[in-house]
Image (cartoon, rainbow, N blue to C red; front, side, top):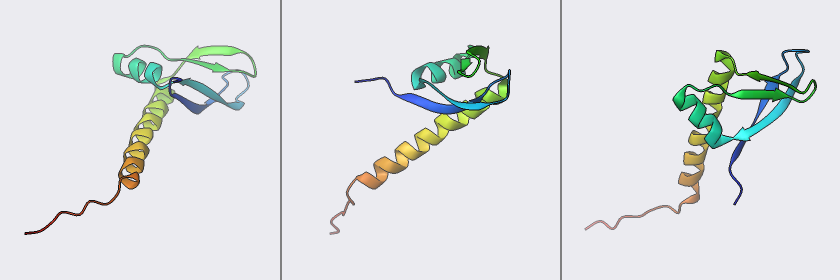
Length: 86
C-alpha cells in the first residue's frame, strides 16, 4: 500500500509562480513535530528551499484539516446506532 501523501501549493521564490508539490504526510508531520526543516521544491526553476515559518504553518493547517475531514468522513460512514431502552 502506498504511503499517504499531501498535495499542496508552493510559490517559487525565483519567479513567484505557484505550482503543486507533493510530500509524504509522515515526513511533514515528523518535521513539524521535531522542528526539522521541510524542503520544498518548485518545478518551474527546479529550485529547492527550506519552508519558511508561514509555509510551515500552512502545512500544519492542511494536516489539521485532513484530520478533521477524516474524522467527519468516518463518522458519516458508520451506520446510525440505536440503543435499546428498558
